[in-house]
Image (cartoon, rainbow, N blue to C red; front, side, top):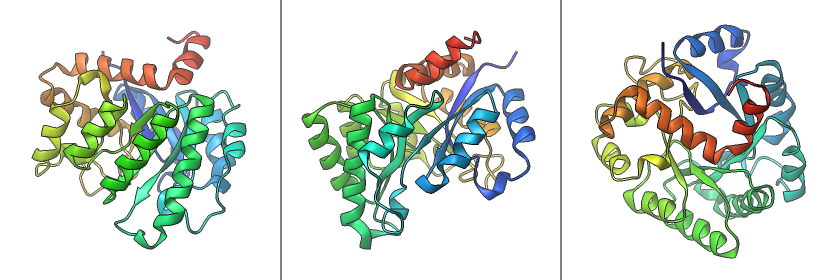
Length: 269
């Protein structure tokens, strides 16, 4: 039997998967990836992403405005995000965050959008899903300021930032998510950051179709490949694959409590 594991972040609505979702989800199940969260990055695409979650039992979804799109899309409202959260399979707010690598010119609107998403996470109790790239100082400052104003749950998705931002997030009670980047041979420093974190604050993800881990690096990523990253994660924490899969799945259930409750209500827990 393959240990069950969760892909906490993927993008099944992207064109890379068009017409292939049944096969992709079947391969995920064969690899032990029994649940996945597909992320909507532009709110105008939310109906299509919702439809994927409704059509496939293992799939949950989240929605928000990606920071790289913040200047191109209408600014979300707290009310809009809270309304989306009424759907039983809507389990997270985002992804949102700051990206100064490609879109530094839109810093101001990214910060505004981020704070709106934080307010929605605070109001709904659903986890905030953060994208951070080349914006560590501003990210730590905003997350900390907002947390002082009122706590909210959060995961640093595809975490590949500095140890300083990682520690700031952990100190706020947040989670770090391990993507295929952590499995790349040259990611020694990143693996050390993860190794210094409590294992009960770690999730795993693919961010598919991007960032496929070895032995699929350079190819299209998909949820089944979560297992490859998780095997590296198990080594990082000195655990068996089965133990690491169980711990990260329990972490997912703790953070994404709505997904865990929905699963239990279906009698599949």
